[in-house]
Length: 232
Ligand code: SF4
Image 1 (cartoon, rainbow, N blue to C red):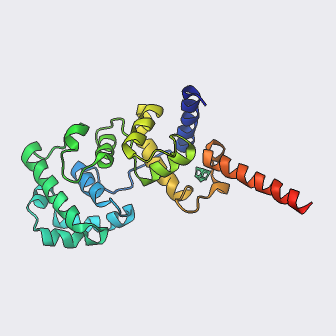
Image 2: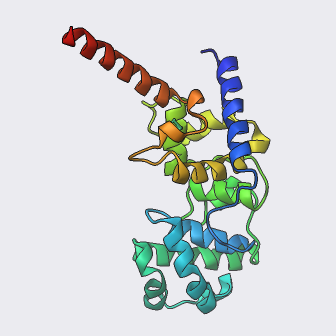
Image 3: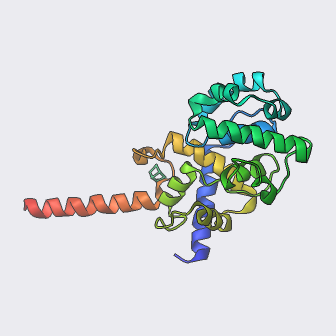
């Protein structure tokens, strides 16, 4: 498949996901506050979005603004986020990132990846989430769902393990205006059909566009032929 054919196939996947999930939203409940999305994004590392959303109301009741979090006592902040894991590092990152936001940016997040990456605890995944969701810029969030599912679709070589390289490949293949919503849709799709361990391929509405499904089908057909041959 040449690049043009690949892009056409990916456009079909993008459209199919659009019809399945016409109104995708960020899985993290940040109520339109950019700083809260940064906080929740950081907490979601090696944790589920559901868990992060669960602790968010109490956390933001105690620390309603970046200014409040910048002044937090670390042991207290740690207690609020403990169930999200890696809580000592995360608490320090959140306090330092909030302080940077207040002191250098007067509470307003910058709208470019270079500066977003300067915030403690913010890697490309969170920075792209912020760019797409807050600033409506093209951005691919290479989280675990995106890496797994796009790999199964054959959007990038599965030998590629570097999230940054995967991000670059996908950025080139998915039209910029669709990138941010595509990533939200992939999260929803990963929860409903394309789970990590047991994807529901038989019920998947876009299995005809999936490399993984095609290869599984071929394996089953070869196996069936072999069994038939051996039983004769
Ligand atoms: S066919 Fe299976 S592996 Fe492919 S996208 Fe659908 S659920 Fe995922």
